[in-house]
Image 1 (cartoon, helix red, strand yellow):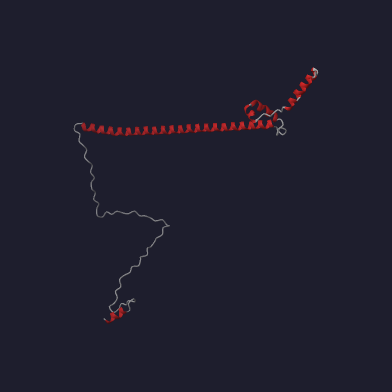
Image 2: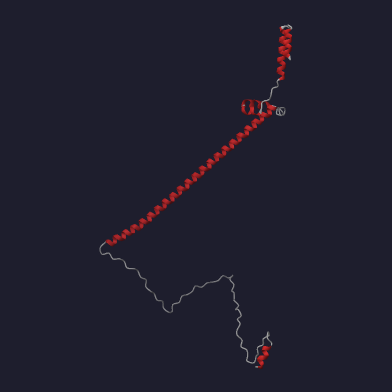
Length: 217
């Protein structure tokens, strides 16, 4: 619209000063109409200088800048980067811990293997010394047997000792403690066979006639 007015007034022969004034007014109006958009979260993530400068400005009065879009985006970017740094540090520490644990396991394995090798070497040395002792003794026996006039020793025999009839083996006396109690075993009753006299008749309760028949016979 402003350009159209300029063209109309120029065509009618307006003075150059009026045209210049109109151009300045139009440029001023165009500059005022364009709004400056706040920097976004991703811009602050990528630009550390802008992020630090905005945070320095916003931290001067946190209450007044609590609703400022740039302050919100800058603080959010700073918190995200700090969380990422903490996560990377934690992962690095875990990796270092795994490396240290593996190194400790390797050292323990090497120490155990060295201990087993040392024990095996000691056992081999002990076996060799034992075998050498028997070998030296056998060589000495063979050397003595090779000498003239050598006689093999006879086998040792044990003489039989006969004890007299009056000899008795005495059993040791065992003294019981005072708290020991003597226990007497009661003999179990045993049923003996009872012989009835000849005049006693046997009566069967299941068959009452048995006694009568027996008495009649």
